[in-house]
Image (cartoon, rainbow, N blue to C red; front, side):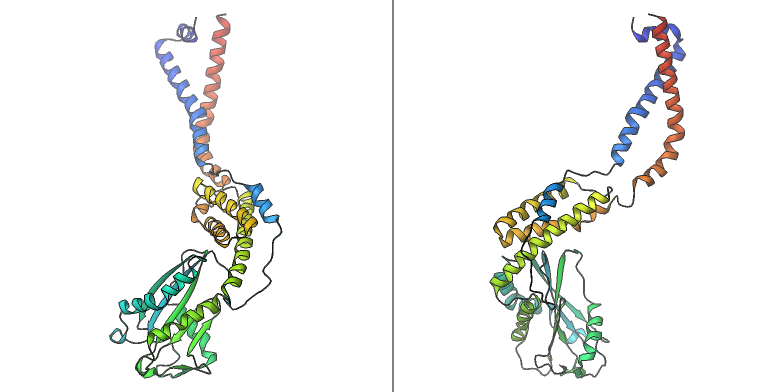
Length: 356
């Protein structure tokens, strides 16, 4: 005799219907609903090669002993921005198309042909007009050294910073003073330019009384680029970059793994996990062969994961806050249902015992 037949003997049809519905609902709530809720609110983290990261970080490596305080450290990627800042009304500004053509014909080909196989970078151009108030005076003709930091601070306010934190932004600015300020020179600076370490450079172009070819002036930015990146010879620079990328890449992975182990609510989805695995693979290859492109790509992937905003999407919802929100919701309903399920199971056991 099956259990349903035994229950029918003990309960009338109306109570039997209520009993079955109540039993099914309670069972689904406690053994399907609650586990499903818990699994969907638990932070997902794909498997990661923690042991390989620790081994990689603990491996001894050549250190970069040459420190250049004026140049950028090796970055996984760069944004090179060329700005034309016209300190006059738009009637006297260069046409944007003309400015882009100058960049495309003088600077971009050299950078792409010389450095694109060694570093990852993007080139952009922008024109800013009507910038009165940046210079100390409307009729200034000589910028003193003590005035340069204030000028750079005001100028930087107009520029756009990179939205990707792992990318270094390099600014190259062609500044055209207006007619009242022309000619504008820099104190004790025959090149009439400013190089700001780990930031970029500014060239003053006295358009209204200058006979110099703008193409020639723009090529000065190439020398500034080499100075800002600390490039003396390509071979030496690539060797230093390879070591820096390897060391920085594995340090980024180690910091990330320590962060993930200490904060369990950081999400690592399958895409981020794949990047981490690929980064570890590349940096392990770099450890063996010291190939620059492999080291750079390994570091780039590590930086992309470290600064990816998806890691933070559940960081502000720790487990104690989840329970503080859901316990008042589920406990008043779950406790009576659990007690009801207990009594129903006890009732079924009694029926089975009596009909043995």
